[in-house]
Structure formats: C-alpha cells, structure tokens
Length: 142
Image (cartoon, rainbow, N blue to C red; front, side):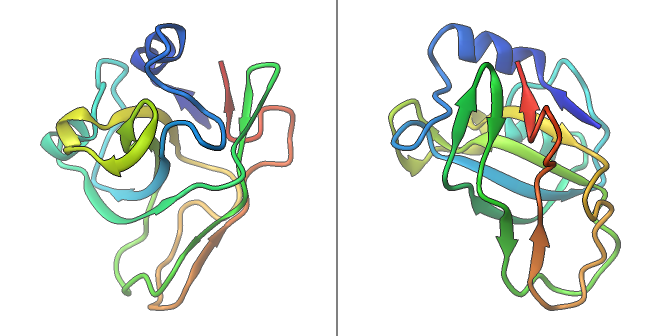
C-alpha cells in the first residue's frame, strides 16, 4: 500500500515540495518500528513515534506525470543484517530548491509504503534493491 501523507498534499499545493530533477532533494528511508499516522508531517514525527531509520538514499530520475510520481529504482548499499524492514518512507530532505539536508524536524514526509516489490525487506548485510511499482500509481499519486 502507498499512502500519501495529507500534509504532503498541502506541501505540493503550496509549492513547498518540488518533485522533479533539480527540485527538492527527495529520499527514501528504510524504516522499522513505526505505525503510519495521517497527522505526521516531518521525519522527526516518525522518530518520536518509535521509528528507526535503518538507511536512507536519494532518489534520482524523478518524474511527475499527471500527478503520478516515479523515480529510478532504489539501491541501499551494505545495509546491516537485522530484523525485517516493513516500511519505506519517501520524504523531502532539503529545502524547496534542493541543496543540503535540513534537520529531521524540517524534512517533510511524502509517502509511506508498506507492501509491494520486496517489502518487507530482509537485510542480510548486502545491498538492498527496491523496484518501484510498474503499475499505474508507480511510487504514488496525488
């Protein structure tokens, strides 16, 4: 399932999240110990709710066609062995125009994914590859 955070919709409509190459820096995080909440807005909310960020990678080749968002498939290198990773959270890591990462209290949540592809992920110390859905909604849609 792919859920767009309601606060992300507000961010897109206000021009505070830009999903395109050269726009905001968009990342995908492998997350354990978190339960989705439509009231959450920032990565700090995930952490405060008990979420553990196992690994995070910048998404590339961002596209937005008719409100459907996609990117190149994700690769997380050398993720340590451990418990299953049941969620991927897509988030805006930078200011609107890109650049360096901002604090977790300013990193806007966009999508929460809990199934599809190879979710839950079983880390074994090697690279983790995630192929985004080839279906109509790809990573997610507005």
